[in-house]
Length: 220
Image 1 (cartoon, rainbow, N blue to C red):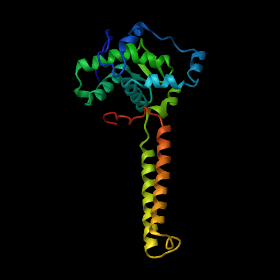
Image 2: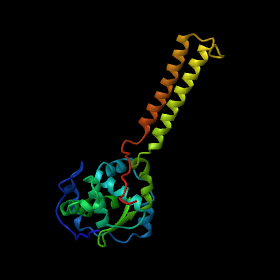
Image 3: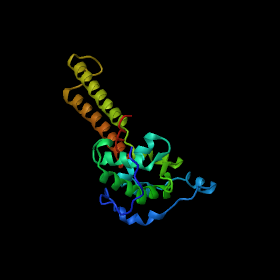
Image 4: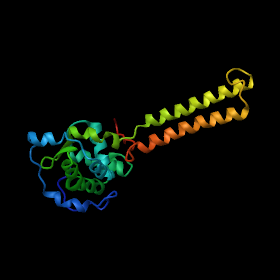
């Protein structure tokens, strides 16, 4: 991993938010957290704050990396992986300019913002960062659980199988479907699918809208 020295300037690639708006934090050197500050980081994060933090893809990438490492991380290592994800390439193939651009934005803007929100503990002087205990509160918004989609797929498959069995039973006169007319059976199947679809729609609308698949760290 390459180590990059402290840099100045603004990030030209804002990923949906202007990094220059927060560049005034460049000289910020966080103090050691006292007991009161640590307690504040256990307080619930507001929904508006969570959405504000996660609306920027670069910050989401940084959080994905920190969650997978689960410990203290060097800023240089974090910047390299985020740059690789942003450019859809491997860490070894990113250019010095790509690495420096991400490093500068994280150092000056994104990590101070995450630290102020209480989501990470960032020591700008030493160039190290780790997740705080409050970071657990953003999990439902940060990660999309693909298992939920699989669950709904299984429900549709089960309903389709039950419908097929009902149709076959009706054809052979097997109770209780044997006495149903074809139209009645069709209406019953359609209503069942409609109810499941409505439940799926309600569940999707109530789900967080910022979730995404966590990118994988190379070699993990």
